[in-house]
Amino acid sequence: MSEPQGEDERRDSDEGKEPEQPETESAADDEVDEDVAPESGDEASTDETPEPQATAASQPEPGKGRRWTRVLLYLVLGFPVFILAMWVAVHHIPGFGPLVANTLRAILGPGAVAWMEDTAYGVEDWFNRKTKADEPPQAFWDVPTNLPTQNPSAAPSTPNGTPAKPPFTLANIGPMYDNVMTKGDGVWVPLVDPRKPDDRVRLLKTFVHPDKVRSWSIMAIVAIDLGQVEVHPMAGRHEPKSKTKEAKAYERKAVIPAEHQDALIAAFNGGYKSTHGDYGMMIDGVTLVPPRALACTISKTKDGRLSIRSWKAVKDTVDDMLWLRQTPICMYDDGEPHPALSMAKLGWGASAVSGTTVIRRSAIGLNEKGDVLYVSIGDFLTAQVIAKGMRHAGAHSIAQLDVNFSFPKFFTYDVEEPGSDKLKAIPLTDNFEYKEDEYVAGRAHRDFFYLVRKDEGGGS
Image 1 (cartoon, helix red, strand yellow):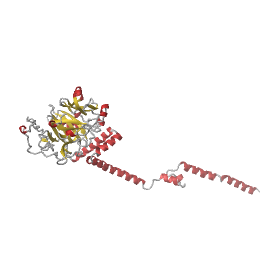
Image 2 (cartoon, helix red, strand yellow):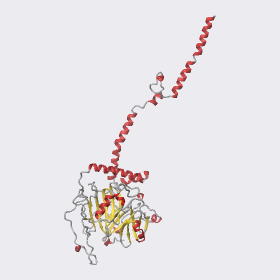
Image 3 (tube, helix red, strand yellow):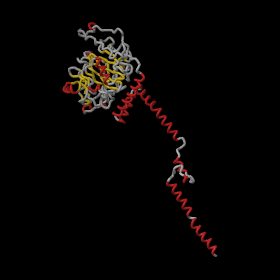
Image 4 (spheres, helix red, strand yellow):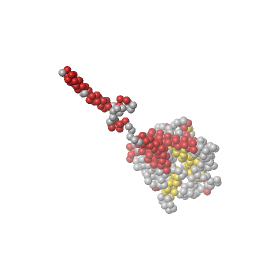
């Protein structure tokens, strides 16, 4: 009796232990749920069978790391190619550069784009200094050994029989630096009107290499006889922006008027876009943009006198002005250089490229007597360098006009074909971005200046 009773007790005891096993398995399951991806090497988990989701989360997809490596490699190799392609497009596809710059300005702002331009041109200058250091300087055009001269007594007479004004001449200015020069540096040659090649000389041209450490830096300079040539400004269709109530009602021609095209000699670019400083402009008695205090002012008064001075120097004569166009601070004002020209870092125009950036630039200047106007355009120039070049040519007061590859330009004009009335632009040098009918057909987006003969109805 006692033995069966003992076996029952053992069975009861064993039966009491059996429920403990499921409880242990349940605890293990809970532990796995809490840590879906246990660390490898954990001995306690080696006997467990990992669930499929845990394995997928802890193991990278096959080839995923290699794909990201390839993507990164493509980006590293492709970015320089992209930048090079953009650079080529900007310099070879008309209008592409301004399109890209304007789009980026709308997204990032003018300051950011100016920084990007400074950086890009800085890289270009670094590359040029590494690859062109030993290159000899090149000429913009061939200079004849024996230049033709015009005898003042042989100049044509006016309709009333009085002698006409003598041809325009200037003493050669010579090279700026002996180590970067060609035989043509500083030699004035006539800039002939293609439509009237026998007309007396009114414009002269020369070129100089103005940077003694960059043989590839070069600028063309045109000298204009203000006794025989009239200067006219023209507002662009959109630039500068209208900033006054009267400006919004002003009809912008934005093209050289038909009545001036027969007397037309040449045309060249105007000043900065409004986004780069809101520099003033007044034309036909209408103020499009109010003058700025800290700006250089190109103006013409009712007595026919042209002036390039700081706004402070001319503001009291504004009621006597026929027109005005402002630029950044005068580089030279009445013979005195601006202190910023000698600074290591300077800006020349709000939200525009730095004055120390090596870039295409244009400038306008006036001699001390006020009867010769100078216009220059050049490549690989800083603000200081173009100012020195203009000073070397004879300018007493100097203002920078526009900068960057697409905007500086200077043209004379010829007919499209014999017998045609349509004009086509002839660039001063062969590396401008332009349209053949620039300024004479279709409305120009930006402001410009044009030159006409005074004796053929081109006066103001």
